[in-house]
Amino acid sequence: MKGLCILGATGSIGVSTLDVAARHADLYNVVALTANNNIDLLYEQCLIHQPEYVVVVDENKALAFAEKLKNSPISAIKVLSGAKSLEFVATLENVDSVMAAIVGAAGLLPSLAAAKAGKIILLANKEALVMSGDIFMQAVAESGAQLLPIDSEHNAIFQCMPAGYKSGMHAKQARRILLTASGGPFREMPLDQLVNVTPDQAVAHPNWDMGRKISVDSATMMNKGLEMIEACILFAMTPDQIQVVIHPQSIIHSMVDYVDGTVLAQMGNPDMRVPIAYSMAWPERFDSGVEPLNIFDVRRMDFEEPNLERFPCLRLAYEAINKGGIIPTVLNAANEIAVEAFLNEQVRFTDIPVIIERCMEQFEAKAASTLEIILAADQQARLVSKQIITELTH
Ligand code: NAD
Ligand code: MG
Image (cartoon, rainbow, N blue to C red; front, side, top):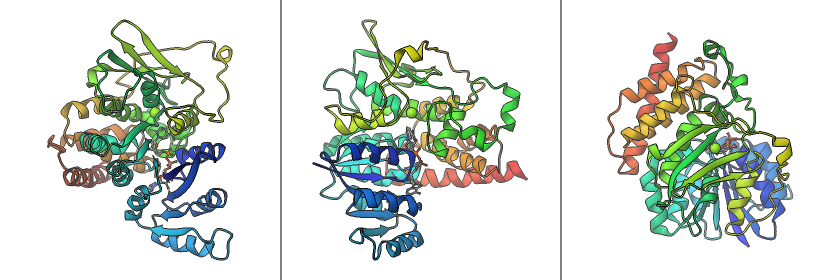
């Protein structure tokens, strides 16, 4: 029996993880669930999974949640609040596996705490890795933690790596990674119409059902930019070894090109329960609840090179990793602020890359050698981005 902690249980990945865990209650015991503020969903999840701990980050919501538990059949659950409690539950003695599924920079400290504590980390929170790549991988290596990627592309690449492969290793025989992308909802929209797209249009992804932030990132292709950086870190590759490939059907989830000319691809229906189940069962496999792939329904698969004029965020991500140091952190923070402003209808869709680029211009590529430097760059980039938004909108 493995103890499971889910950071971000109420999100899209969290919900899929609990679905898989419920299918394997003989193997997984849910020890802790965390949420930012969605206590209604959290309560439903607690009724089913009966964790020992929950964390509700928002203090008032945590009080309301504790109130709700009183006189309920699940009153024994311990309720904690505050961001520090995320680190506490991620490092509990009886937790073996931590699903890191908080969105954005907020996931960095608890994910890193799990890495330092030597847990099996199921990493969905790509932003944490983009910010702290070297420090994160060092923590994993030093503690003997096992890092298994949940992002469907990185999970696919991991599955296509040689036997015995561990995250962070450089597989010499693998010469290139082909990182697939759906191209999002605006792949074919005339360029002059992008300025008018609404948040609702941007979050309506053609193939995947995801949280709002990552859905906007998919529409701008910043998601692929973050994933390209994530792939460089996880697989010890250089940016020029990673080719982004637009594959609108999302059946192939990425490929590894070997020195002998072999290209290995991982395929499946686009449902995050596949990579989640793979990582939960690793090194075995078990049922994910996902329908078998009907190859005859797929019929055809298309592949295109991404157009950097349509997707300037992808160009900015390459720029950020090539500059290195704190610049990927700045890219990520500026993107989080710009996407939030877009979702709040303060800025236009096409302003997102403008905000990020202007923000990046204001930073030197100082080495990301300590967590303090990274967190300070994150905070600074958020302030600068808000300033840029004020200038743009007045
Ligand atoms: P989501 O918005 O659906 O859920 C986010 C979760 O994080 C929620 O449980 C929320 O309560 C929690 N959260 C948000 N802000 C928080 C904060 N400040 N402090 C603590 N908790 C907070 O997001 P999602 O789509 O599930 O994505 C989660 C992560 O997984 C992201 O990093 C995303 O890039 C990655 N990911 C998601 C998918 C997908 O299909 N959804 C695929 C690949 C990678
Ligand atoms: Mg992905």
